[in-house]
Length: 225
Ligand SMILES: Nc1nc2c(ncn2[C@@H]2O[C@H](COP(=O)(O)OP(=O)(O)OP(=O)(O)O)[C@@H](O)[C@H]2O)c(=O)[nH]1
Ligand SMILES: [Mg+2]
Image (cartoon, rainbow, N blue to C red; front, side):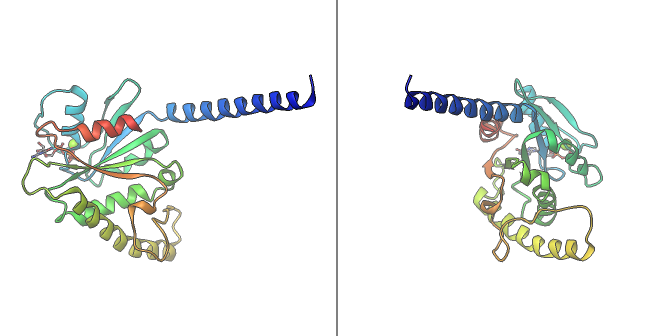
């Protein structure tokens, strides 16, 4: 066999090896992360969504949750519904190492009124270094579109960008002052207004309504991740 053929064969084997290693590492990375986190402030509709999605049943009445709901959602994934109450919700961070994706539920009818607490919570989530490092995908699920007072998704995105931009100003100043050990990632580009597109992880928006059982956007997004 001449040298040229040998080199070609060696190159082919090397390429195959590299592809196998990359493929395996991608597979194990995804397999290790089988949790879909349902986050959002109280009354957004997380538990209602969890029940509808899981049981594929009817929309049922819910009460404000004080503990997590956990259950199988697709063959390989489980969903965790984390209560929005501010004394309980910090526990979401414990699940981030095994989180495949985050569905952040927003009540589209009260988002203008509640923009501050919603953005505070979303900031907490996005600024977790592990979320940026692992590039955890986030869907902002704009729920309750059955109500005529629901704001359109585009408008909700703009409201959130404006509020997150404002929060970034105060929170980065605070972190610098306190030098706290609770690390927060800087969201977006320094010197530019905050945009979701500037983040390392992908943040998408989708509308839905648990009330009229319209969860297509959420379900489709979850299976794509
Ligand atoms: N109109 C309408 N109401 C909804 C929809 N989804 C949920 N709700 C109602 O919103 C209220 C709050 O829903 P929950 O699912 O309990 O809210 P949650 O996000 O789990 O709240 P916490 O457990 O307190 O964090 C309930 O009365 C639901 O029936 C929807 O798509 N449309
Ligand atoms: Mg709940």
